[in-house]
Length: 394
Image 1 (cartoon, rainbow, N blue to C red):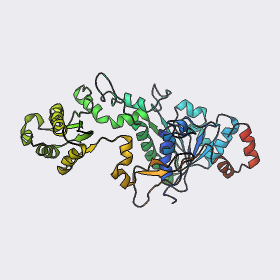
Image 2: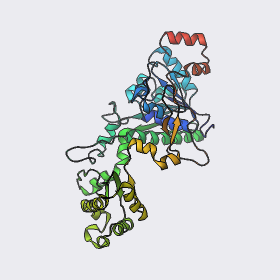
Image 3: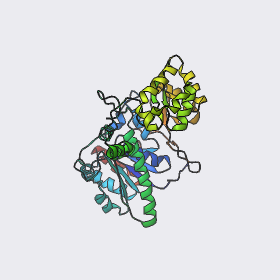
Image 4: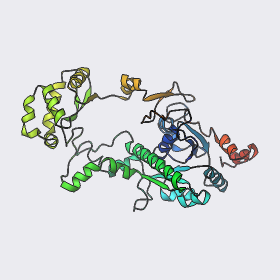
């Protein structure tokens, strides 16, 4: 399986999620992606270890389909290798603040001196050009600056979402931007910089709340899982678990009222519109809780399914692994890695193309696995590689 991006080469100088997962998506559809790490391994290689070697769960996910090499680009001889790699590449991915890019010679100006039509895909926490641009940051920075964390949890305890949704959103948008840049280069011969920023991604996802605030000055307060602009929208306890209920729009509300055996609610002026139902959502949540309290999760889900009202069980990580639909759809693919007790369930590409599908072709690389192979492709012989290794360049 070659993939629609076969023939393109991507140099991945990324760390953690936003840069590396952008490159992963390009690799998923056929690009030759070279993950370049520090000699001791990048920090994300060891985050959330899952075997005795210390390999991290996240690394297994977002570095599949890549070749891996080690390199110190801060030394002159390392810079020479970077230049030779860039000469062969179409895209450089680096999630670093501006000063970090310059220090490593990965800013657009430096790269263009090596290859004029190179595409630089860069991701930072804050973006280039503002007063915070040189600050570093992780996913949580985007979450708390966007208003999303403020609106989660309660007034006494804001809650950051556990999964790094800002990082992954930024990675996916950066991949789209990279593809657009490649299309533009194909038409014009021009390279460019593609810039993603964690704060920008988070503001995009939470934009509706910001627009509402700017237009109405409503100053909403957090209400845990209970929705504020429709209802009932909440996570409801059952006899043996929890279910999420999401009723948005009049037709769904009317079906929910019939399911609850409360048809009179359809004509109650407190519940006329989505906004009315959001304003009075605690009343609706209480009705949903009363319906579910003596029923099993399966029984509650059956009621909602029969009424065609959206609902789902709250799943633990193990329950998600065991879920029959997730298994049937193949959303998680078993991928081997040295010294794992069994294959790791790695999420496949989050989109499916019928004509040009992506896929997991091989596992993430062990540290420096393809260093010699890649240097050989650059015309560097075994003796020189041995010298570079002795000098701690690779």
